[in-house]
Amino acid sequence: MAVIAGRQPSRLVGVRVKIAHDKRARVFIDPKLGSARFGDECEKWISRHAGTELTKEAYKGILRSHVGPVLGDRTLAAVAQFRDDVIDLLTIRLGEGSNSRRKIARALITGVLDEAVRAGKITMHRCGGITLPDNGGNGNHDDFVFPTHGTTVPVCYMRASFLPTGINLGDVGGGEPGVVVVPSCAGLVASPPS
Image (tube, rainbow, N blue to C red; front, side, top):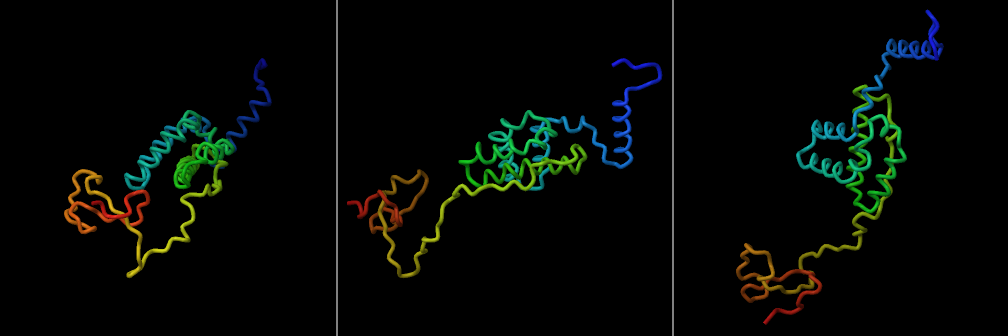
């Protein structure tokens, strides 16, 4: 489209008016800010996180193994808009994983996006409020009864030589030196070794 002397296409005028309005209303977001790599933003967020070193390592592991390969090379603005891809990552790719891994991944993704909104890099994101279905976790342990004093507990015996090296148990259990009594260990000898 050619520009006639002194006249600008109405489309350009509309864009300029919109930018001027957004700047005055303090809602203008420079599109360049949203073009940062999501993986880089995750690393920055983790390094600034107030958690312990163990927590940061958990986030780094999830980023390296799961979030990075799927979302790491996308822009911040793209991840903010692709809720379906984030849900697929959390429920399909990580669907067989533990609930805690999926929650860490969700916290990482939404934490980075929330911080980007607060920093003015993006206006909003669509990844908040994602619920994770329970995939069974560790199972139900309601039937477990902790033994009380005087309760008979099935035991089995194991030679101390099967234990990891460096453990000196001396004369423990079974009445025979080097034999250890281990409660409820299926598959091991049910009577003291001779």
